[in-house]
Every structure is written in structure tokens, then in C-alpha cells.
Amino acid sequence: MPHDGHDHTDPPDDLALRVKALESLLVEKGLVDPAALDVIIDTYENKVGPRNGAQVVARAWTDPKYKQLLLTDATAAIAELNYVGRQGEHMVCVENTKDVHNLVVCTLCSCYPWPVLGLPPSWYKSAPYRSRAVSDPRGVLKEFGTELDEDVEIRVWDSTSEVRYLVLPEKPDGAENMPEDALTNLVTRNSMIGVEKASAPGTGGAL
Amino acid sequence: MNGGHDLGGMHGLGVIDAKPEEIEPVFHAEWERRMLALSLASAAHGRWNIDVSRHARERQHPADYLRNSYYENWLVGLETLLVESGLISANELATGKAEASAAPTLRATGPADMAAGLRKGHPVDVPPTEPPAFEIGSVVQVRNFNPTGHTRAPRYTRGRQGTIAGLHGCHIFPDTHSVEVEEAHHLYSVRFSAEELWGSGASGSAVFVDLWEPYLEGL
Image (tube, rainbow over all chains, first blue to last red; front, side):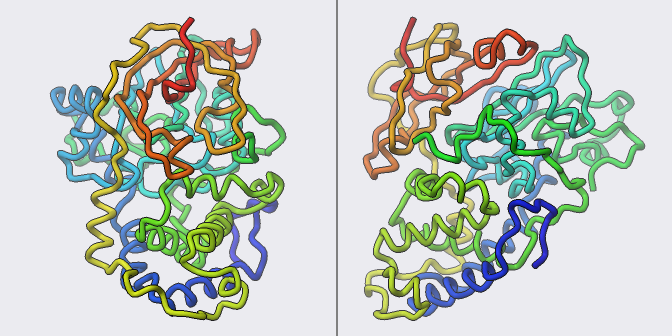
């Protein structure tokens, strides 16, 4: 069974068979349409992902009016770029500055802004992150290699309602004159969750 | 409920062990793809809502919840929902064999409607009928309550004092929504200092939690 290295959460070997049996039953009973299953998988594996969020961030970095809208009505601002739908119905964007660093978690399950970031990575859904992001955010950030000055206030957003949070990372030094398209390459998924800063120009950055 | 899902502040769960972003796939196995799709497609029948669905996962034994992988918890939740809603029988689940065709009024959502549904989502805001009890800056305390049903007030906030930092309007209330009663209440962003939540050793951070009016008392 392929696994992701979380030894204590490895699925039992019969899990794939159990899912297959359930799918066969639901198809046989006419309760699910296989073509609709394909639409769901294709949407979240290939179409919706963190490149959407990177477009939002890059636009906010280059267009002050758009940034203003993003910080006051994120749902409308994100819809302007046509990123809408499930798990993004009520969006709030929180801005990182030199004094404030924002970090998003869902301690109770795995709430995450799908239209802008896609499905959450394994670690975001994992018990270690969910348990400690609220009680030891500095320690959590260090595990991602992110060290903040002691006087930076960390704001942790626990996604307990249907409101979904997007972090607007700080525009990195050296990126002042970059065009919007190039800026998207500096915006990593992790920087929009808040566990990292955006990449500095010339360091590789996002895919 | 004070279940195995309510993890904020818990210790001993290990390192985060994040894979580098550029190499982590969206799904780690084919069965995970199927699990996501089956969950969303089954939910399209409207037999349960998101809070009923969350509660179905939370009701597991805490040891099982924590031991299971993420999508395994989805599988357990979906099996529970399918049987409890009557879409399948316990015997069908056990044998994998269909015993009777779905009622004629049930029609699986097709690909075009599914795509439209994903784009539409499920907004939960409702026009308010009462003004909010609190305003930005109001000092509030989360009620010390321990419901055995579904709630979205994390344990670590109960009995703690915070400050209203934002108003989100009226949103459907998950505690009653999880038993199919649709009420809406004012939803607030409440700021808690790290010291208030975790003691005098914690500092330099704050936790913002979205909490509905019935969870809160004015001070």
C-alpha cells in the first residue's frame, strides 16, 4: 500500500477494497453516477489548486484597489477572478505585515479554502498540526523553517465556522518591480496558509 | 461533543512531518480519489448536511478517529451516513450486494449538475432577524458547556474570555443543524490572547475563533 510516511495512520491493506466495494454498491443502486465521480476528481486534482490563490495574491500585490477589496470583501474579490464554489462561500483574507504574521488551522476537522488553494495537504489535516497550531504557533512555524522576530505578533485563525481564511503574505524584498505574472511564482501554497513567507525572487519559489 | 476530533492544545501527537510542497500529490492513493468523490456525490442527494456529516466522523471512538488516516475517517463517516439515511441498508454495506433498487424518486447527480454544484457551493449566511448582541471590542466569555452532540466551540475556548474582533453576520448554527434543525445566529470572530488560553508562559500570539452568539456571554 502506498503511504505518506505517517506510520501510525497507515491504512490497513483492505481499505482500498472496502472503498471499491462501497463504490460498486452505490453505482449498482444508481446512487452515484461514475461520470460525476470523474468530474469531482478532475476538478480537485487538476483544475482547482493553489495557483488560483497565487493569482489573487499577485493581483493584490500590484493593484492597491484590488487589495483593498480583498481585505474588506474577500469573497467578492476572489470571485472577480472567477474562483468560486464549495468551501469558499465565505472568504476572509488576513494580511501579513512586518508586525503581524497570520496562520490558518482547523482544529476540529480540516476546513480549508478549496477554490483558492485546492484540497489541503496531508500535514494540514494531521493531528500534530491541528493540535499545536493554536497552542504553540512559534514552534509549529519553526518546524516549517520559519523563524519570526520575537516582537512579531502571531495571529492564528481557527476555522470553526464556514468562513474560510486566506493569508496575504508580505511581498518579498526585491519583488517591487516584478510583473504580476512573475509574482505568482513567489507565492507558495504554504505562504497562503501562513506557515511560510512568500519566496524571495530568484530562490525557486512555487511551481 | 468532547470527541477525539477536538484537538486544539493536545500534546503527544508527534512532529508535523510536512512533505515539501512541490512533491506532495493531491491524493496519495487511488482509493483516496474515490473516497472524496463518493462522499461529495452521495451528499448531493441532500439527505444530510455538512454538520451531520462532520458529526458522523466525530462520533467514532476517539482512539479510532486518531488512529485512522484522514480519508479512512471519511469512509467511516460516509458508511454511517448512508445507512442512517436509509440510502443503503446495513446488510448491503456488509455484503456489498444491492438488495433493492433505489427509490424511483432518487436520481444520481450527473456530471454537468455536479460541476455546477461544485461551483455554486452551499452558502450558509441568512438575513438577520435580530440585531447582534455584541459589537467589535465587546469582552465576552465562552460558556462553559459540554454538549454531547455536535458543536463548533472548541474545548480550549470554553470558559475563556475574549474580545469581539469581527462580525460575520448570521450563519446557520451547527449545533442544531447537525440534528437537521436550521437556526441561524450571529457569528463573531473572537480574539483570545495566548495567555488567556494557555497560561502566563504563552505570549506574543493570539487565536481568533469563529463563534456563534449562543456560545457567548457578555461580561
